[in-house]
Image 1: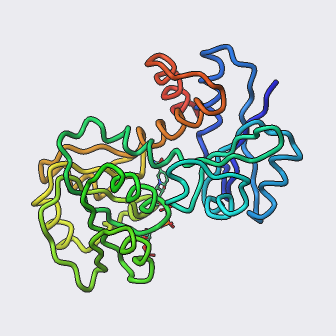
Image 2 (image 1 turned 120 degrees about the vertical axis):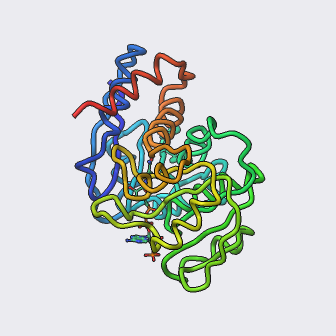
Amino acid sequence: MKNFTIYGNPVVHSKSPQMHNAGFRQIHFEGHYDKTLIEDGNTLKENFLDKKIIGANITIPHKEIAFKNADKVKGIAKKIGAVNTYINKDGKVLAYNTDAPGFMKAIEEFEDIKNAIIIGAGGTAKAIAVALSEADIEITVLNRSKNKLDFFKDLGCTVYSWDDFICEDYDLVINSTSAGLKDDEYPTSIEMLEDILNVSNYAMDCIYGKMTPFLVKAKENGLVFKDGEDMLLYQGVLAFELFTGVKADKSLIESMRQGLKES
Ligand SMILES: NC(=O)c1ccc[n+]([C@@H]2O[C@H](COP(=O)([O-])OP(=O)(O)OC[C@H]3O[C@@H](n4cnc5c(N)ncnc54)[C@H](OP(=O)(O)O)[C@@H]3O)[C@@H](O)[C@H]2O)c1
């Protein structure tokens, strides 16, 4: 049996085990995926290698430490500075970021996106901004506070905090804040949000499994919208392909989606 896990703190609510184990069952792969609570991110790599884990996902708050400690960082993760996937290659740790391509896959159904506004400037916003910039999509970032904006400025994004925001036209608006996750807050003031939604066509919330206040407003304003379920699913699907070497077809992806809905 090959062992896989997700590292995080907290990790108890993660649906990744259900999603990956459903995928393993579907392709009759001898794998088992569980959860590992890690408090000190610097112990993550040692745990991964000592326990002979074949592949792992990494979630909040360890993605940046996992990036720093990997033996080799692959692909788009080098620009993001954070990884969510480890692969054990003969005792060396290869690290990937599947959040960024997972996000792009999730917005595939949105047509003709030329520019986007990302609300929020945390780790998820970084992965999304790098993914969008690789696709030559013009990016604006709007965050509550100023101090996280340098990364985005260096990437070539137009950046604003709530104090100095000037609204333009956007094809896509993304909520990458945690506003609405455990509360009923909007990711900006209601006035700013109304201005943005008035000039946007599509809305995506990174939060999944609920109609957040942001999505409720997007719906009221007639935007085409979706939550973060596909983003979560596709980062998982892309990690699964790295874990197993099996290219996911439609039925495998649907099994993994059903896995996500298991309690
Ligand atoms: N669907 C998926 O696969 C997926 C994957 C990853 C994350 N997510 C979701 O994405 C969200 C962000 O995650 P993250 O890792 O980027 O978090 P993070 O690094 O902690 O960043 C949080 C961001 O949200 C902003 N924020 C927090 N509360 C706010 C509020 N009440 N009003 C306005 N802004 C607020 C913060 O602004 P300040 O800088 O001003 O504090 C910061 O920009 C979470 O809800 C998470 O669940 C979803």
